[in-house]
Image (cartoon, rainbow, N blue to C red):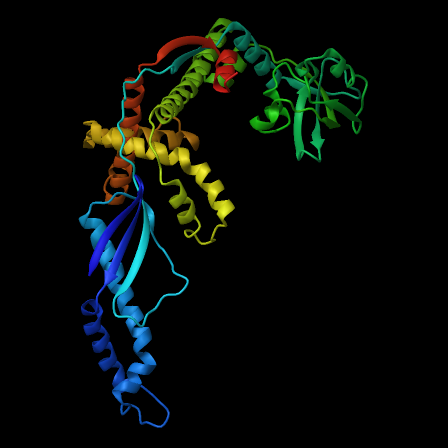
Length: 441
């Protein structure tokens, strides 16, 4: 057998395997002999068929089966021996006409190789670490929302400046069909609010999306349009009024404070504002950390240049999965997944360059935090240490879970290291400014 590599480019090659008669003839002969007692040919008793007839009837199929086995095993062993880092799996280059009658048979497989590249984790970037603060405007707005949320709704006959209006925004062309409750002060232009004044349940008010709100991103909240459709959206939407209510704001008293935050935890308006600020900034910190991580990842992808076996991967994507993809579908799928694949390459190189290690305490700590978060989602906000430790012990007794968690902890540590190496500049902003930065505006 002869096996050789033929380079197409730095990340794409062909493996050519030439199979000699000695590689398969012995096994083919063995299979023919095994077939003889079972062979049936008209005019001969079962088991008494001459060997040349058995070979004529079954030989070609057996030869093809045995040669394929030899080739697949040789290909697998060659890839292992050469230590080839593949992207995707080998694709056989099919010939329009393949002559199985010759004794020496040649097969070709196209492969995509993981690229070699250098990774500079300390390259200068313009990544920013945002410290998001809750300003007075946000806090006062939240106080007003709390009073409204826990206030008393008084049904009204007609819409006024003080009422809340429940109904549905619709636009068939854009697929908008969003039930929502609004107050008239959400609109940027007072003339828009005036369209609602005096209307009754069942009435329909038509407004245009262009300049409807102070911030176009509010279209995402009120109309449920995607971020891609926000800018430049200029269509008429109908709002069908269903209910009209005027809210008597809830009194800011100890009963409301205890209901919101537990008995005795908040005792005044100043305490309430401090609590709102604390909770909001804690939530903002999580969002800011996620943006920081995303920005570092994107910076690494943008700054780390290497080629991928693009043409090969597009062909390979057509062959995998239950549903075979067309060339156009495979190309679209490639571009959807390219960024993730590039970062996967970067992750692997960064991990190889680092000395990241995890121990059992890392696993216990990570598992404990995960369990507490899951329990909080189901309303168990204050589980005892004993309860959590019992669940942690059961989880970590499962070797598959230990492997999965180890990979997650390693990945988290790696991302933390990448963020530190990026050396981001720190910038304090309001939440409005952070949202603008998050959407690149």
